[in-house]
Image 1 (tube, helix red, strand yellow):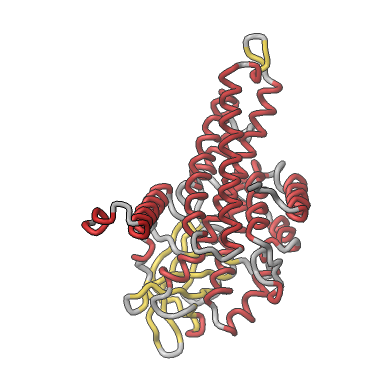
Image 2 (cartoon, rainbow, N blue to C red):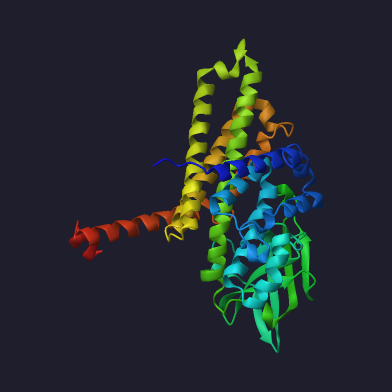
Length: 394
């Protein structure tokens, strides 16, 4: 079976890449230093419909197929991982509302999210809660016709500029999701600086001190917060991150090919050295492999195949670890120059390490993927009768 993009997907890919070259690529290093994303860029992204990429057209979205959405994340991730992170968190919230929001929430919020009139952020992580996300410490209590939130969130991507937040809190002891607007009483934002990577993603801490929100801002039902709403949003987030990691890997590869074509050592260009060619070969192979895993996950999402979830975890695991390896090798190939902000590979390395942590760390993916493998093995042995007695004993 030949895996190949359609003519329309190839055309769209060219358009995405042209936009990134024109509006992102040359400026990403400066944004990283300033830890800031220009509002003019966000406006341009919104005008092209990227903030409503996966929303249905009935709400003003682009209704992109998932492979095209993956290509969008790869191309923007190739230019700037911070800017790609905006697509991730904004579309995670949009997807969660589209899937779990009630009719009035969809009709009111989704057109605003699709147009970029408002920016959304995903608020799950806390100072004491990361991978064990279902154990959030933020609380919500119903008081009359309002919910009162107390607690703190941390590492919230684009939290400095978001207009609305999808916040996860314990209500009656159950993880539950709520929409919190930035002007809600008792809500405050504290910018975060000096993060290892994706520094332009304007991360923030969120504080809730008797924060009052309308009762109708409950998303889904009590207890739906983690197992349903967060889980489905994180699945889409992992796909976005995985595709963005392919973009990092591709950017590293292109930077290394350019550098080794221009720099000489021992009287010849670097590209003539056998060990350099070995590194380039590994970069090419791993980048292509990661891209194909992302395409596979996207295709399965498009056909609503239940295996898409585990395939997305596999894609995220492989792409993020490969991006880190490729970025590390890229710095090594650049030598001392690779440690300087004058060359983008040092930023790629910092950004790639963040990708191994967000939307499910490398270790969480290893647990998830291995468990899936054991389940598949047990299912296969039961259905085929192979080693049936062993399965029955376990």
